[in-house]
Length: 196
Image (cartoon, rainbow, N blue to C red; front, side, top):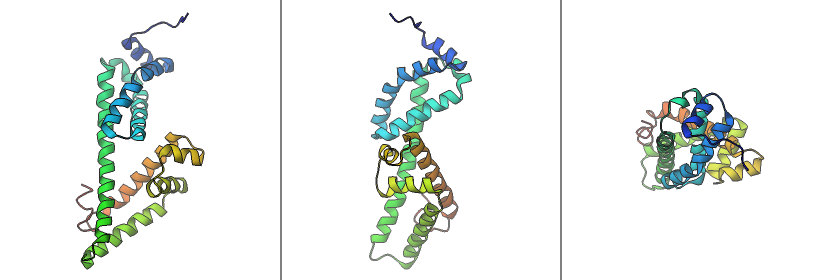
């Protein structure tokens, strides 16, 4: 017979806010599957859904002292994961639009000289930024973006955890965005409006 006491959600929140990892784990287990289904319906990506759940609970644990003030954990978690999902989808959309624009500009046979120069400038900037990434970030970025491998496949291939792979990808994309944004004014017409 299980002798573990049954706690209400409010009691678990109080215990977790005091640093109880078992209480926090119980809360995580109560919501992870519901949140995963919800996020999968929003993002259509198992990887993104898992990453967002991880980010959400990491944020919750880092700010655990305020957990005792949460009245409805479910509502709090759905709102937080929804915001993470929206931000993730916006980032993906920007990346896709930039790459799509570059590709369409390259394929236009009647492109003006200015457009061709802009495309080359952006390509050079992206290439240089990727080459200057730390070796592990560069390898993971290349495997993900250029070879199309999933985080789990990269993790398996490099003997790393999925969260380590995800963290390297986040850092790599952040670096690339920071390098491109200051040049968005000079890179006329292709990405200046995308970085706003």
